[in-house]
Figure 1 (cartoon, helix red, strand yellow):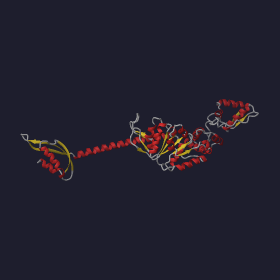
Figure 2 (cartoon, one colour; figure 1 turned 180 degrees about the vertical axis):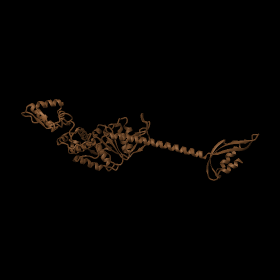
Figure 3 (tube, rainbow, N blue to C red; figure 1 turned 90 degrees about the vertical axis):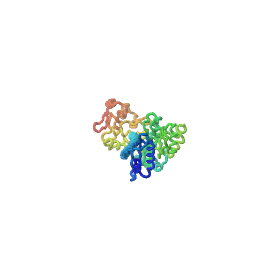
Figure 4 (cartoon, rainbow, N blue to C red; figure 1 turned 30 degrees about the vertical axis):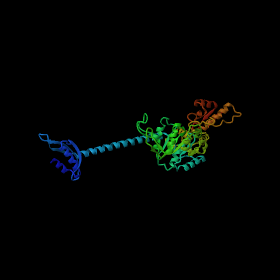
Length: 445
């Protein structure tokens, strides 16, 4: 009777399975505790949990089967919802951790970029030498051709690379800079290609490399000539195949990156000396661009000076309205071994120390070619003059250059290589006085 009642509860499709369980019970081998998903005759899905006991007579013969069931559908649904919620939560936590790691990597990179001086927006100048460079930039920018930028330190190779990126179809993608000379040899591979958690001591989490960060954009390999010889085959393989593997990983990752390299070295000489792979050289030097030194484009110096003066004065909240012709003449006469970067630093220091809206150099400029001070005037004609007269003329000439400034940065004492008090003593002895208001210089015979 119990079996029939139970069978009447379930659907036709499940009657056979339920009947088999009842028959086993009547044979004295019931499922003492069971849970089953059942479909009722009305089509409802029910999760039923039951216990069964065999009923026996005094002789031990089976008389029947007693089964007590409970509907645990709601409880099981709640547990399933909780399980799904827990799984979703774990996935969300994992995704957030991945996103957090990615943002940390990008923030590290951005902080490094912020610390790096890469000039100002746009390229300043109009000399023929610079215009030719810009012509080459316009030619190569629209494609994905690898570019090698050559030039002395400080000429603005990174600014040229940024301009190529900005003028290319990849301009909306990242521009990632790698200074090959600044990377420790034991970390170069990890920095370029990334690493998996536990790949080496200190690798506490997975980290993407610069190639992955530059995906869809441009990777600028600055000072590529400093890349260790043992790393060059790895770089060549990536440039050829467009695939990388993180350190400690086995997954192949496809990267879509345009590579622009730069160096101040003679890579042809390095290839001949065996310091740089010839096949890598031809891979990165598909389109070479040579940026001329500032000494070869002196016509750009006045424009650059005005540009830097306005920039640094605006940043300090001051005004510099005048760059004296004599100051500009000295700047154009100087050799600039540090190129535009050195000029930028000189103007920044000058803006910091200048007063009255007039730019004055903070210190003398030493010529790289002859070691002379670029702020000094030629020694005046000395024929027929005494030593005191020669000294008097020379000191007066320097004082006129500094508009009467004796001490301090850019003063006459600094230019002459004397202590300020020593210069004052010599001026008094030679009868040289400076007007307090006008800064004019006169001598007393």
